[in-house]
Image: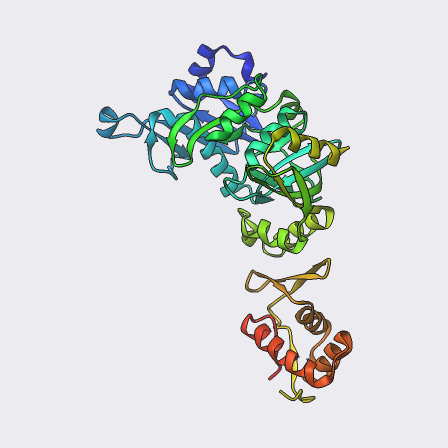
Length: 300
Length: 96
């Protein structure tokens, strides 16, 4: 059964009753929330994802109002994992964004049976591109554009490297867009399904793009890494790939990984195997259509 | 520094070094400390030699001189700097 098989009323009811277990790639999360925004966002962005009827859940999370007098004066929202809240309360209209950040926190903080890099990853024709990218570099914009152009999304935020075979494991969760990139994607892809924006978050305005149906349907297919690309949006720049040192790419991904140090020598070996398997590039661009052409040629 | 044939260097036993080279750039991982460093080709040459077995300064200087096709005195000066850095980072240590 898919989440989209539920009506909005049924979904709200199950979320309020703590009776919704959502599978996203290798993880099953039980989500408990009485907040209508959470149900709205899930139905809009996770409709293609399967519900899980099994007994085991990796994460038990709740999004709801915090206790105390303050909630009557200024509506707020908080996130709990196994009854503990890792974040400070946020304005109530950030509920869905907070769920997304919370789900990222759950994976990044617990899934140490993978090497977890802070990077997006997509696949085309059996080969995957990893986008480490610094915040604000245009990584998520490019990720959304490639997904909406037929690349298979594995992840927007967390690249999972399988410790047994070095292949990349998908989550296929929504792509998080920020600020101007929301309208960039809206204009370039008028049919893209984008969730309600959360304004004035610590990242500015945030909105999420629904993953393609193909990305969700094939989330269980691991992908072979082929390229590590550091994207950078720069006004007026023609779209071009240039070589990037693999040693530098190694050090960048290691220093931005969620658990490289924790995994010790295994983290080194997995990240090194990723670099062994890839060519590394810088990528500058200003126009999305030019960028998409370069990546179409890369994957051809 | 005059390389001393009686002065041996080694990888600290707890280091459990791992190494990768891509296009002439070298990255080493120190398993004991959990530190990852990029080293020059010259330092990498010394480390790789020490990973095989402890070696004396004279032998290391000869190795560097031959690899870089420079005079032994020039290699000896470079070796001193390399060993100092490796010792500071605890990637190599003199054998007591």
